[in-house]
Image 1: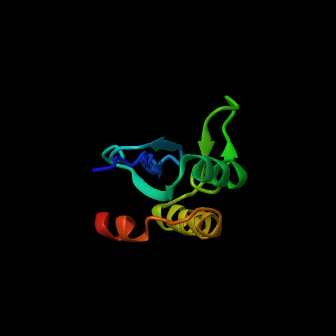
Image 2: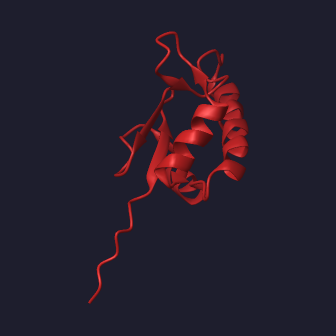
Length: 100
């Protein structure tokens, strides 16, 4: 029996505030998964499309922090996910639908 050295996928997730986080496990409660794939691709995609917070370390989904309501925040999230899709091997559309 051979062992494979397959690395777990990295998942990018977002809080309602727009803050983006990363995990190789389960996304924290109250967050939505936005992308999944090899760590380098997920980080590259997010860093290419996300906005940096004032601390210059925290990634934010553009448009969510300043959204006046949930509808505007959702529109910003969907736009961001559409921009990530071609940059990552697989987005988590099924995971996203499962939490709605």
